[in-house]
Structures are given as structure tokens and as C-alpha cells.
Image (tube, rainbow, N blue to C red; front, side):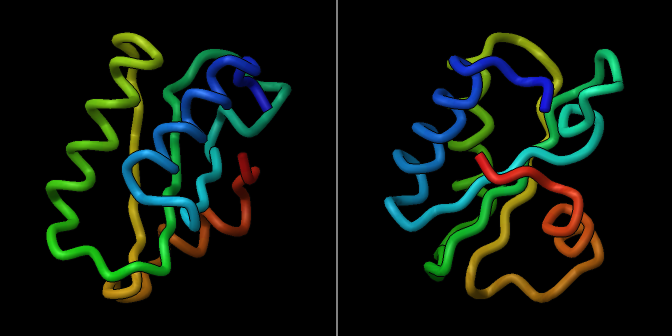
Length: 99
């Protein structure tokens, strides 16, 4: 996994602050592969809670991550209890590394 300890800590703290204690987050895509270079940071956030406004929470996550990690390309996907299944969630779970 190509994230620093400080980056992992910032991502975990953001997940807990925005989504609560039960939130789970993993990194997937090129940053999950040690033999790759560069690339954006692909993050999969998951919560068992039912979010009233997923779009607002996505904005909160992205804003907090940008402040914590700096101005870099970050892709955020979010699954809550109301989110229907989608192939991207399966890929993120299968190939991702829990943080």
C-alpha cells in the first residue's frame, strides 16, 4: 500500500469524525499496489448507518480529506445502509486494503 502512516491516520480520523465510530474505510486502485507509481487515492467508505443526505456526507468527506491530505486527486465512494448494490462496491471490497 502506498500511503504514509500520517495519511492513513488522517483518513481514519476523517472517517470516524464524519461517519461515526462504526465507519470502515479502505484504499483500492493503484495506491493499494506497491509495484505501481503515482495515481490518485481511491477510498471506499462504508457505514451501517442510514444517511439522510449521502451527497452532503460525500462533500464533507471530500472536504475534510482535502484539508488533511492537501490538494491531490482523491476519489471517494460511499456506501450506507440505503445504498443499493453496485459493481464498484464489490471491486473496492475485493481489491481494497482496510485502513
